[in-house]
Length: 289
Ligand code: PAF
Image (cartoon, rainbow, N blue to C red; front, top):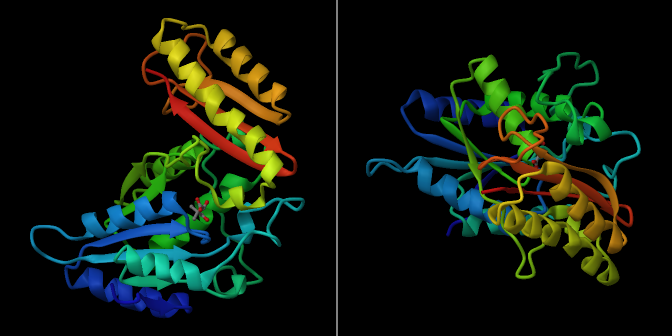
């Protein structure tokens, strides 16, 4: 596959994408923070597939930008892993046509930037409770990327379930007119959900990290076997994770769209969790059948 065309200037990207859209080309966008892994690969390939429609080739687009506004002051912004060369190779393999990778955060957020998107309800609780301002940063950068790109559709991973709910609410409330596609979690062979932050895990911590997915699989099996009480499902998951030495941020069973906690799991309810393995914060989830 040929290398994608790289844009570093958001204004040049905007001109290119808007001209394509105005001439009837279908645009599929994958916003990322880079350090691309197999989870991103599935999004990029799906973008390629969905950009092309009715025998017409569309444009498959990816953005790579470590967005400072979604990191708290004590979070891992400065050490967030980066590998633009590797990411461009991954985009090329997946058939991505254009990549926007602004090298300087000021290109996206000028020093006097003052406009923010706050998705009030979906941003509350769960990750929103332990990462104040996180979803405001996510919604704002995604809104900006949507305006710069004007895609027909945009793809996001379901691992960030709450993020997906925030983006869906924003797109609906502010009438972006963009189809938001959620793609299933991609896991390592041992069950660990793929994440750029897995790169932080030391070998000994990996076993501990596995308790997250294992506790979710156990909950899924227990729910399928008739255990409907969220409290019991959560207690079992907490016990497994704590026994593995990870520090729980939250474990909750929620409604898939409202993200409100449910006392009784119903088909489609989602168990969501976040935990620290050492200093690395990992998230994962599963839909309960
Ligand atoms: O999921 C991510 O990688 C980021 O939160 C996103 C959506 C690219 C916004 O910075």
